[in-house]
Length: 155
Image 1 (cartoon, one colour):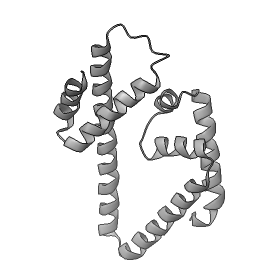
Image 2 (image 1 turned 90 degrees about the vertical axis):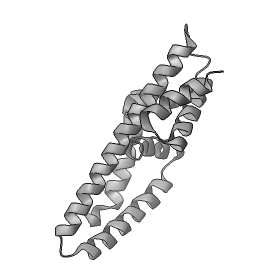
Image 3 (image 1 turned 30 degrees about the horizontal axis):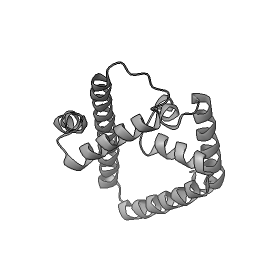
Image 4 (image 1 turned 90 degrees about the horizontal axis):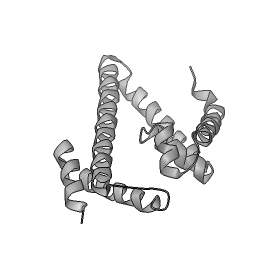
């Protein structure tokens, strides 16, 4: 009943078909998961506002990723050891991913939402139905594991 309207808001803001569809799916999934605790007076307004927030979040994350990529490429083009740095970066990234996979389930989920999806602690807490304090605990725990196991990578 509301899918097309929510999709239109997402698509009109980002002009990408698949990400817009995924956003709509995420919005309805979140609504379904929180159906018992939500008290909505106007479902239409709630869904439209959710779509706007979702697209702003997507744009924010995309801009942030592009900035990091540009900075990495700029640093690489001025570096004489570009290939070596890229290999070291890929090795470090692989090691981080392996360590993240060893974290307990909830800790891993919170870490990925924070670091890979760029969500705030409040957004994570809301999505997982846990307290912000629990989110902070899981992030601190994950960073501690990474710091401990990656100490030989510090310069």
